[in-house]
Length: 281
Image 1 (cartoon, rainbow, N blue to C red):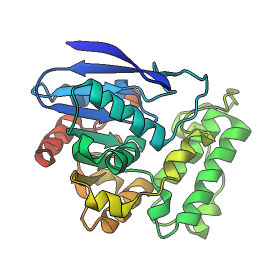
Image 2 (cartoon, one colour):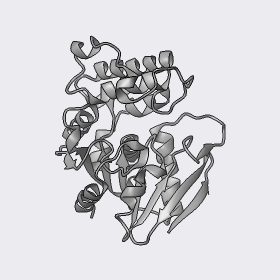
Image 3 (cartoon, helix red, strand yellow):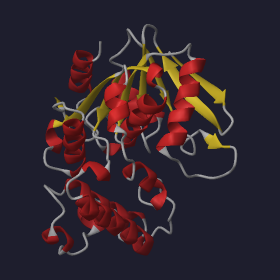
Image 4 (cartoon, rainbow, N blue to C red):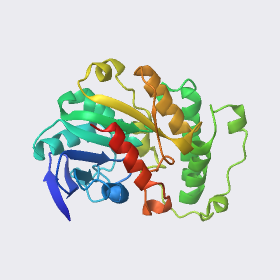
């Protein structure tokens, strides 16, 4: 049974869902909302699984009417949510931008987290080719601004599936055809998608405080998908793990390896859950 609640905070009304009973396991994404964790949550009936929609996304509305978001704001929101749940430390699984939020949560509120599993955090600054990654990001943003969601998403997929560093060969490619990815080539008129617009740049521009993370009492596990090897977010995970003095833990599947049928990008949620259980206390 899932209980849906709303937490009234100074900046937003945060909507969150609670399943099961037992030690708290918080599952967070960005820009993914709570619905993306449904399949994974089913495998943790012995835990109180908490999922939420980050401020400005899904059901969680900002009170000032804005739709931007930062890891700092979201970490502050999670701190309030953890307090509302009875206080930390709790275990956290963070996916993609949610992993970035988790890193900021450990940095600012180290007592809130027992274990953070940070799965493929997209942080440009840790890469040896950080400037080229910024340029590649600007490329899919420009494609989105010119041609809408189909063109933008095709360029985004081209970036995130590229193997290795973003070299001249990457930038010499022709613009990808949206139809090749099953997307419409016509402009849908959208320009404010939370992933394809500049709203997401606060996440990929994040600069982790390595000293604070290594000094925190929380255990941090950097993770990547076995099918992601060599791609952008696998490389960011590897680079972050290196800075933290650890080897990344390999999980089943791809960047969304925990997904069932959500978002049309199925992973291996059962196998993913088994691995997540192995690394959680």
